[in-house]
Length: 426
View 1 (cartoon, rainbow, N blue to C red):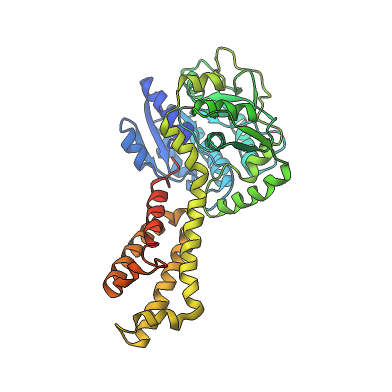
View 2: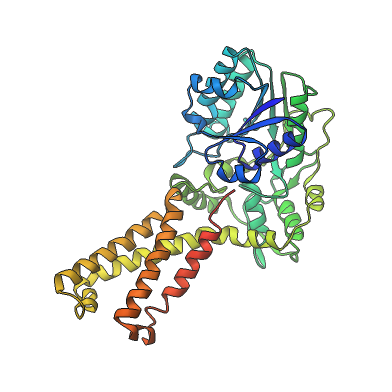
């Protein structure tokens, strides 16, 4: 079959794409930036597109040769580059319209449990509207609602669980005793394969979850053992302490960072992640312990877990460092410009001082915006090297200064390189 996968570069989408290719299907993946996915999986065709911007007429040439469409696209919360209404609701309704006009296509929707405490939030409300529109549009469809998805790799909530599990000595948790049902990433891909083959009949709407739930505390303990770490004391924190964290994560979301600690996720966790529909017949769902045992952890997993929570701190540290390096000299610009008076006239020295301060401030601000972060870090590296070269040529004695104004650039440069190395999210 010819199958189109929306969101094929994501955590779930990539696994589904690999499974359908292995089954011998002709697969095309859509993603906003599929360049890396194209290199990893050249056997699939790839289309770069933002589905939230596609009209019904734009959809038609994309689906005209397809037998089935698998929708894995979505986001947790609105942000700098995420518009849930456009992506999860409007785009889907336009897709259904195009599919009907093209004679009908099987639509397999990766959705979520859309009821509960977070049901009114955009993440679940837009999914619910899209699901209802799909069920009413007359197209053949299957809706799959995975619980917390666990696989060999990690993203979002599962990445956060690994990070919490790696904390030294003490693990602080909110909602520690709330139940969580999990589903293996491979089982989600298996369910899609069954839907494509027709083994799941049109109109199927099922939850995908292992039979037994675990508490968040138990899930963290499982992951800690999987990472090869000794048990650690867990501390249950009051829910009120989660609110400032969620607010900070929401702010980061406005800047393009997709944190799993945003308000939507925290609201969902107030009642846990539990299946409400009957378990699907003919589908065997592996529990979390089985999934982890099947995929032994390595040192790279421990590195990832430990760096996950350090990454935002590193970015914030870089921002503060560069902002201060640009703002502090402005408190006495004449004194700062005095360093250049031996090499140029006073007006040029002042202009150079103000220019370098402005560059530092702009870099400190730009690194906070996810779409600009990579270029900002590359700029930091180039500017740092320029400062080192200029300082070495103009005032080499600064290398021997007790306060180490040039020496201190080296750890900043190394922090930038290391943060740049872990910037990618998928």
